Image (cartoon, one colour):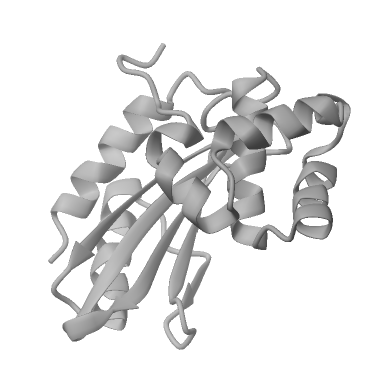
Length: 180
């Protein structure tokens, strides 16, 4: 079992941000969703309803949907729509996006002992994907930031349960700390 808990969606996105972006605080969205019996809907149906019926931006519709599913016990923190679990971490570094990804990919390859299945340095958001045993993967990514900096990130996906989430996040944070 993980030593520490992994936060819910609502822990990372404040109520003020939700209201500013969607026009309503999270609790009001939850009341509307409950009144519509959305706890029985699919994830896609909830997000689509928020966009189509209420004009919520698609990114924010996903965020509200995940928060609702977690608040109603439909989805646990870190759990994906398909039932697998995923952990992600990011950090801003003083490297451009290509240098940032190269450095991160080299470190992940060293730590995992596996070469990336795909390394896409030419994309707007460069990525490197590392296949792991049992269908799990690590995805390294980089996004350009102002001033020649980049936001580098790691996602460890397709974990069968949430028991390792906190440990995996801590491990990946350690890797990010070594870059830049």
